[in-house]
Image 1 (cartoon, rainbow, N blue to C red):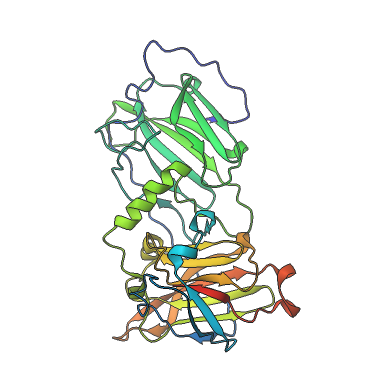
Image 2 (cartoon, rainbow, N blue to C red; image 1 turned 90 degrees about the horizontal axis):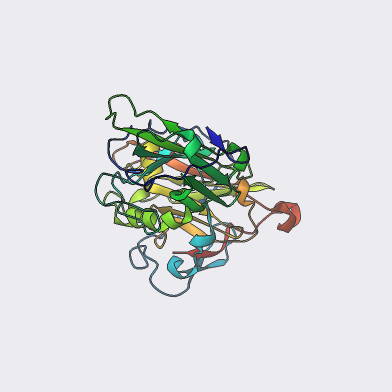
Length: 359
C-alpha cells in the first residue's frame, strides 16, 4: 500500500486521461453490519418530563419560554434550536460498541468538485469505524501502485493518480493520523465483474479522548450531501415519536460527569435502528440529541451550565426499565457528558444540566 510520508515512485505521464474509467462500472461488495454495544453503570437520577410537541410539534417555532428545572427548581429558558444550536462547530459522537457504519445512499448524485460521471452507479462509497474511514471505488484495470501518490496531513488529504488530483482530495471531516493513512489497488470482489479493479483509501483517525468521533463523511464538502440525504429519508420518524409518552428523561451527576438516560420507543429496538436514526453531537458548552436530518427538532438539546470535555463524551444503547404501552421491552439512550472540572463549581457540582434548553 502507498503510505504518506514514505518514498513515492515517480508518476509516469499518461498518454490519455487517467480518469478514463477511474471511478465507475461494476458492482461493489456490501460491508458487514454494525455490532451491538453494552450497558452503563448507575448514578442517582432525577426524572424530567418531556415537553416535545407542545411548541409547534417539536419544531422549535417561537421565542424563548421558561419552564421549571426538575433538579434546581429554577426556571430554565427555552430557545428554538434552529436559531441557537451551532451544529457546524459540533463534534458528532460515535456510539460505544458500534462496529462500522457506511453511507446509506447506494447511488449518490454527482458532487461538485468530486468528478462524478453520469451513470455507472456511485462515484465511490465508504465505511467508517471508530478508528478509520475506508473509501472504495471501482477503477480501470491495469492501474498499479506506482501510479498513486498520497499526501496525508492532519486536516486534509490529497490522492493523485498518474499525477492528476483524484476525487479523494480536500479538507477532512476530522483529524487524521497521517502515518496511518494508505492507498491500495485491490482485485475486484469475488462474484463481481472482472473488467475493473478496486481503489481503496484508508484514513486513520487521530481524534483524542476516550470516545470516538463520528465523521459522517470523509471530506467536508460531502457533508451537505449526507445531511440532505438524512433530511429526505422517509424512514426517519419525528423526534416526539422516539420517546415513551409518560417517562421523559433522567439525569444525574457526579463530580466529573453528567449521566442522562432517555427511554426510546419501539421505533428504536435495535442498535441498527439507533445508528440509522439517532445523532448525538456536543460542543464545549452545548449538547444535542436529535433524529438524523432533524437538528432543528431535537429530542434533548441545550446550553450546559458548565464546560464539557468534548473528547470525553460518549453514548450507548441499553435495555430500559421502562416498558411500552403494550408492555413491550424498550431501549434507552445512555449519554455520558464529561465535565471540565476546572470550570465547575465547588466539588464539580452544577445546579442543573442546562442553563438554556433548545426546542
